[in-house]
Image (cartoon, rainbow, N blue to C red; front, side, top):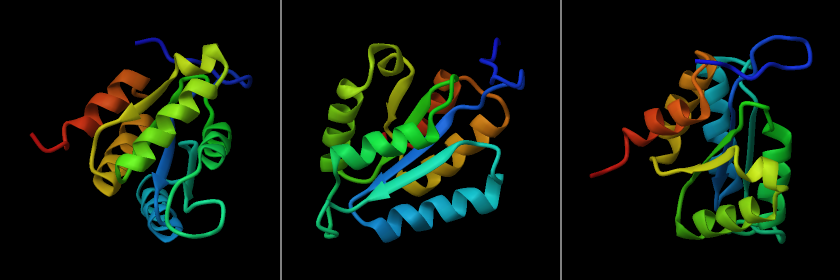
Length: 139
């Protein structure tokens, strides 16, 4: 396995983005991730529509991707269908080189985010992070 490196020469860890219709759910999930894996994994969250109500926003998702960006890539976890659709749109609006290193993960939000962050903390690749979290998806 070859890890991307940061400008300081340390291995880059995959970033995690949490997208929920509720800012409270997104923030709470991110808090759980931080408590379980610490601060070494780039992590960002967003939730709610631009008016502060339930929903998601493509612009907020892009900002979260930028905040969690890592040369190793970013894995996005979502709660409901609209969050998935807006995340797909956000990925399409990224520069091409970032599109290739940004994946949408099909996993339960809380459990998936924790497993994805744990895999990222351990140095897993973007594909490892996605696959580990998706093992939790209902079949």
